[in-house]
Every structure is written in C-alpha cells, then in structure tokens.
Amino acid sequence: MGELQKAFTTSFNSWPIEGMNRNIQLFDKYITPELTGKKKLAYLLVDALRFAIGKELEQSLSSHFTVSITPSCAFVPTVTKYAMAALVPNAEKALSL
Image (cartoon, rainbow, N blue to C red; front, top):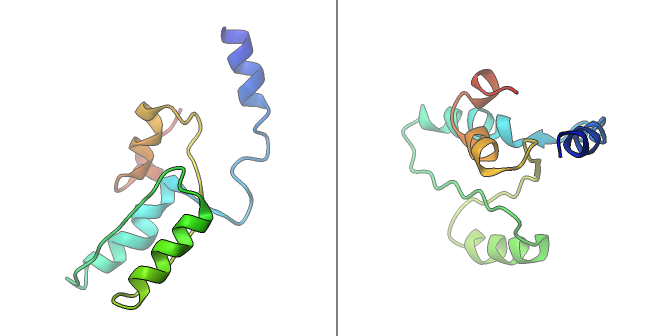
C-alpha cells in the first residue's frame, strides 16, 4: 500500500495549480483582514459543491449581501485529518507533511 500511495502522490508534480489559491491560504488571505475591521462576516467554505449550484447560491445571496466565489486547490492528502487542518488560521505556517 505504501508503494501505491507513493506512486499516487508523485503524480501531483504540478499541484497546486499555479496561480490558484490554495485552501491552506484562504483563512489568512480572505478572513483575517476582514476581522480587523470588526465587520460582520459570513464565511462559507463548501467542499465538492458543483460550480453551477455555487453560482445559483451566489445569485440568490447577492441581492442582500456582497458575495464572491473563489476556487481553490485542496491540501493533499485530502483525508480529513489534513484537509480540515488546512482551513484554520495560520495553517500555511503550521501545517506541513
């Protein structure tokens, strides 16, 4: 199993996609700056939501709120232990394999 996992993970040579946000950066990049202004903020990070459904959600909320959709690359491996840890403040500095 270890050899299979090694072969699988080495196939990610170009991951994350260059120029795209990474989940490990999202909180610090988008949420932390907003918290300093003491504004009310709702942050929805939706895993595996089809883009078309996300656009519908954006359209329904945009009449009441400022809304933006930002795609990002998951932290690999995507098992819960690591993927969820990649979403917290300071994850980029604290999380590594």
